[in-house]
Length: 144
Image (cartoon, rainbow, N blue to C red; front, top):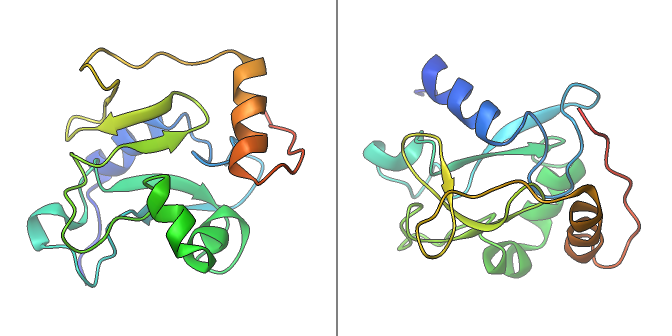
């Protein structure tokens, strides 16, 4: 099975601030993984390991936010953390603690709906989004 290139991994890690896009937890202090928004089983070879298809999530496929995404498919699709087989990772926005709702591209950038460069939110905004994504749970973010 093929894997993402080192360059792709570096771009994803930098774009996501080496933190979980769902809860904001630093992956320096917790285990995490690069999650395929469009699952490898349905993604074509050309899009499988692209920066637009990969996001950082804490945990594994069964623990942390990564586990939550796989256990709550409908909600994960709503937030763009999972993409249906017919979806295009570049055309499906994703909710992130760091930037809000953004589009991801092949150069490792996040952009807003109108195409502008996404900018990081404040700590207050991040905590609010984190609580919203976690279904009201008060998750404390670990700043990296």
